[in-house]
Structures are given as structure tokens and as C-alpha cells.
Length: 114
Length: 114
Image 1: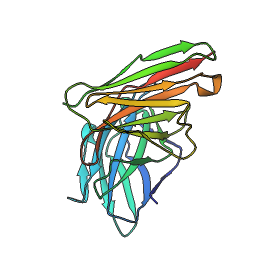
Image 2 (image 1 turned 120 degrees about the horizontal axis):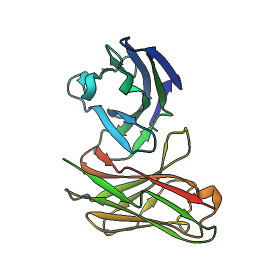
Image 3 (image 1 turned 90 degrees about the horizontal axis):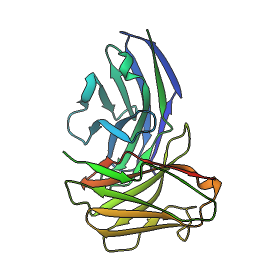
Image 4 (image 1 turned 180 degrees about the horizontal axis):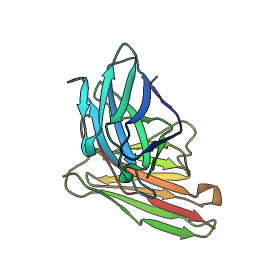
């Protein structure tokens, strides 16, 4: 069975500081991994996805994530936080065998301080 | 692009009534659509997978007779909450699958049952 663990329900950074949101996954098959962002009362927006190509994945808004199989991790980073990055972030895993079914982590709320 | 819409964006109803939520893929055909439920400050929980022309597949613990799903065409899936009660109040989000392991999310529907 697949699962996703996001370490830290809340992360607070200062504007301009590094953003690091942690995600570990469990999957019995090669996974597809995703990071989504959700603003209040809105749906999810895809930031980036890993689909077994390059292990370092670049996404929108300056975010990137690195797939590390040995650590079963897919942490999300951004070199310099902006106030507009404050939101809820979800890591998700999907079967790599062609299925769409996606399992979401509990989410991490990012706060950005001025 | 790949746009998914939901209607209505919010609905308030009395206990005991039924509510229908529509999910449409506006610019692509989706053989598979998903329905999620999200409680405040929590992650998305998959309720069911909807395949065009066939019965939906419900996740464990989701009452199929209470949450009726119909996927009438390649661009429309509907979720009907029958005999809604206050505990059904939640944020309902749909997604549509475009390619293998690529989902696009609707903006969500806020349901409040009085």
C-alpha cells in the first residue's frame, strides 16, 4: 500500500529565507510523486511532479524537489520565500503502473514572516 | 491548458435534502474523475473513482447510497449527497485525469448543511 508522510504540519520562515517542506513516501512500485499547493477555499494547483525521469524536478513559482530513492524522500524547496508562498502544501503519491489513484499527505501549512 | 470546473462553488441546504455537485472538464475528455472530501485543516480523502459509463468505485468507509456518483459523459461527473446531514458539511473537490498519472483539480464546492 502506498502512503505519504509530511513532516511538520506547520513551517514558518522569514521572507527571503529558504523553504524546505519534507515528504517521505512508501510505495511497492515505482512511484509518481507530486507537490500541490492549496490557497484558502480553493482547489489544488500542481507545483511539480516526478515521473521517473530526472530526479531533480523543477516546478512553478521557483519551487523544486529532489527524488531520493534511497531515502524514500521527495522534499520540496525554494531558495527564497515570498509572502505569496504562504499556503497549504500537499505531497502526494500515485501508482507508477498507470493508475490515477493518488494518496495525499496530511499537508504542511507554510507561514512566511515579513 | 486543462481546466476543471465545479458547480456550485458553495451551497447551503437544510438537513434531509439532497445536493448535486457537478464536475466538468472544460477542454479535455476525462475517462476517469475522482471525488475528494476535505475537512477543515485536513488533507484530501479520496471518496470514489468515477469512470465514464460504468459504476463508481468507492473507497472503504464511504457510503455509496449516500454519495451517488454518475459519470454520464467524458466531460461530466456528478456527486449527489442524498439526505444530507450536518456531518456531511465539508469541502468537496473533484479531479479529472487527462494523461497517465496526471490529474487536474476543480476549485472545490463548500457544502454547509444546516
